[in-house]
Each structure stands twice: as structure tokens, then as C-alpha cells.
Image 1 (tube, rainbow, N blue to C red):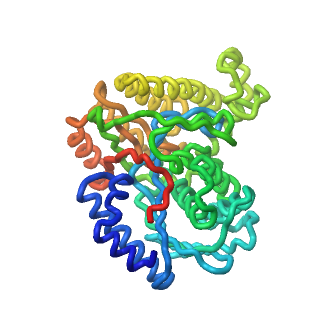
Image 2: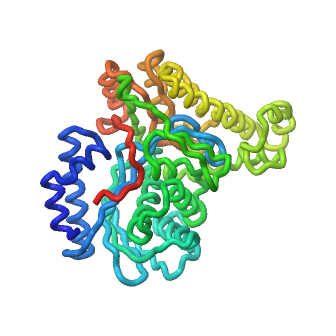
Image 3: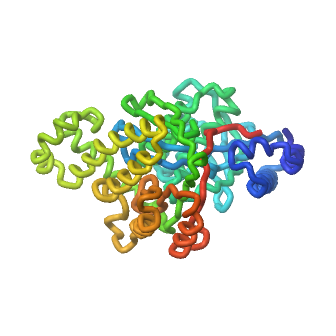
Length: 428
């Protein structure tokens, strides 16, 4: 559709039903999304010319509900897509160059896809993600080509809501829609995103973030075979229980903590290596416990307690899924709290060792516990070390909870989120 026609369709309510399903069915949200999409189209035209045929794509952020740092050792997780997303206005172009501008950034990403080899100069930059995603499509025999895009994201950067995975999934969804007729499924697009982040961007992430952003809804993911993860829907309906998901930004950016994240994976894998295995999923918990004294000598104590976290966390995920399936919300909430304590005590990712004076996450968790003890749940969000916390708050405590956390972290700190049942998608 031509840009002016699509703007008119948006402003006249032609996408309201889509906005309702992606975001939230209230007039304020719908009005905000109308303006957001129209503004993104107008910015696309400002940078890339008027009168072009365009499409719009969306990919959500995500929250990890249970299974903190288990995916990269082939564990199990429970996660959900949320109604914060990145949108992209896209038009195919001639030649071999992908050009992308993002709201709030001055620099344009320019990627010549004539070469799909790793470029060391792009490590840690968004161009690397784009090149890696195109390379992954090529390796799978998929189509690819040039396009221009303008993106706008409300997935909080550096917050643990996976703004990077949302970006990767959005880029993959664009290529899937524009050059492949949508033939690649959500799980495959998640694998493609992880490949780009691991091999081209240079961050040793697991697969949970990309899979959740790509598939959508509340899901469990078993990574026993990471090339073909088992993804199942989990029937968690918070609204019917009068429980709200609140994510609070502690205002500390985690974007420069790659070494801290990498240490978790490396230490868990060092324990696996002691047993001659590649990852902890392949190690028996009883075998590990029987030889902890030897493992300590070989790997160090922090690796041991992080391994304990992995084994116990995988158990909690399975129990949490069963609690949801049988409708036992109280037990599910108890397990979420246990998950949070294990992350802080054993996985030790509540704050960065190199910056111990910055402990926004522990402060947020302490306040949350004082308000929600016995009524809800609270835990650190995502990778940890900095960024956000999450809480599950009963309706009668929502105002008090948000007011208190905002008083500590700022008026814009608390975000009441909804589960989004759609992953990466072409909107128009």
C-alpha cells in the first residue's frame, strides 16, 4: 500500500482491531498506536522518499517468567511476549544495500549484503545483527534482498525486556515476509536471531529471548536439542486472576555487561566440562552433588553455586508449568518468588561485581517483598545485573505498589504490561 493511503487507513481506524490484539483494547492505547504508526510512516518518507509501496512489521519484547539463565545450557524456561514492541516501516529496494534508521538514533545502519561474511569491525553493532540474519537466511536456502526501513521501539533499551532480540526478530520477520512468503516459522526465526547475535554481533546469548519474541504468547521452551527446541503454549491468564504484571526500570543500563553474562554461561559450562559434557543439561544432578568437592577444586565455588541454580531452576520451571495447568496460581506465585531468590543467591546476577555500589535491582526487590509478601511475586527480570525487575501484583495493591516504586526510581519507572499472544508479525 502507498504510504499516504496507509496513513489514512490508520487514522480512520482501519487497523484498530489489529492494535487491540497486539496492545490493549482501550481507547487511549488505540489512539497512541494510531499516532505512533502514522509518525513512523511519515519519518520513513522523510528519509527514504514519498510515494513508495510500504509494509509495516512488529516484533514484541518479552519477559522471562521462570528459568533464569537456563537456556544457554539447554535447560527449560517459561516466558511470555509483552505489549511493548518494535515496529518497522519497510519498502523493498533495488541493489544490494539494506538501509535502516531507528527513532532516537542519528546514525543510519547501512549493510551491503553482497558479502555475508563476518565483519570484525561490526562486532557489537546493529549492522552485525542485520548481516548475520541475512547470512542465516542464505544458509537455509531462503530469499533475501535489499530494503529500506524506519523503526520505532518502545521496548525499553537495556531493561531486560530484550530490545536486541525484538530487533533481530523484526529484521527476520521483514526478510521472511518480503522475500520468503512467510515460509519460515517462529521457532526458526528465533534460531536465526540467536545465530546473528552469537556469531556476528558477538554476544553469547541463549535462545529464549528470540524464540519468545518470535512465537509470542506464554510459552514453555525445552532446549534439550537447541537446533529444534520444543515450544508449547502455557494457559496463563493473569487478568482472570486479578493479577497485574508490572516491570520496573531501576534506571541502570545493562548494555555494557556482556562479560558478566558470558561468565554465567562459561562457568556453567566449566562444570559440565568437568564431567566431559558440553552443557549442564547433559550432567546428572545426583552425579554433580556426589562430586561437588572435586568440582569446587576444578572450577571454583561460583561455578558450583551457579550450577546448583541451573538444576533447581529447571525443576522449578517444570513445576511452575504444572501449577498453571492445574490452575494453582498460589503455588505458581510461590515458585516465581523462589526463582527470584535463587537468581540473587546462587546465580548471583542481581548486581555487577565490577560495580557493587549500583544495586538498583536489590533495592527494587526489597521494596517489592515488603509490599507483596504473601500476596504476589517478585524477581529480577531477564539477564540481571542491572535493568528491570518484575512483579505480579494483585489489583488492590497495584496503586500502592506503583506509587512506591515510582517514588524510588522515577515517575516513568513502572510499566503495567499485558501478555501479547502474537510474536513477530506483518501488521499491514
